[in-house]
Picture (cartoon, rainbow, N blue to C red):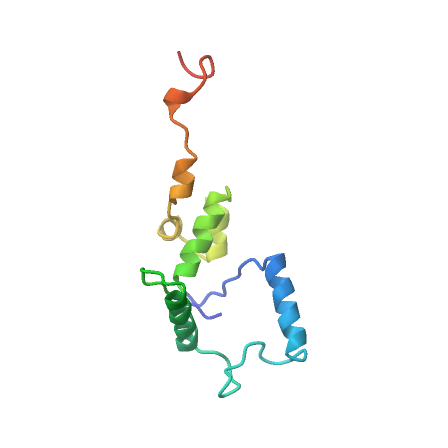
Length: 129
């Protein structure tokens, strides 16, 4: 809510994630208020708290690169692109008005590059001769 453009953003909730959240919800006694309260104040989590959790997870995973919560948006967009989701749909999911804003998020991974076949390896008779 209330992004820098004053625009709400939406995303996809995977079935797996919904199952995990449902289990968590039952384990926490089916709370009606805040699903993830701050353990000290009981209020909503802050951006700073999320950043601390990410730093701890990055350190535990022994990642060499700096990873921030914003990196998750980039990863989300890149994975959608690798799955063949159209750029207009990715743009809508990211909440961008300008397609150029979306381009910044779309990174070509080594995985996608490894799947590209050289035109020289195409079978004879299937292309221009």
